[in-house]
Image: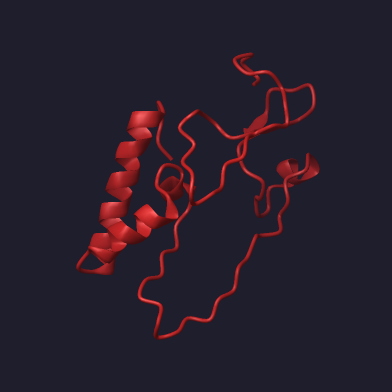
Length: 123
């Protein structure tokens, strides 16, 4: 948006995070009004006083779940993994791996390859 490639707007589509993959570009960014910084592409940042002053929350989004014997996998990952892999793809990949280390390596490799296909950078 700052580069003029996309109009300023608030409509970021009907994506369902975890089910849909956004192959069309960067997420919304937060800017200091009238300035070209910080350009953050996140909604939460712990300890970032500049970002907090322009509307980024320091409160983490949390989900609690009791792990039971019916739970076979637990994946804790960031948008670096989930940007171009759906929740189901991540579970399917992890379930085929022989160990947590192999699952981590495989997920990072698959996510990295998707980043290279869809972006000119990786996360």
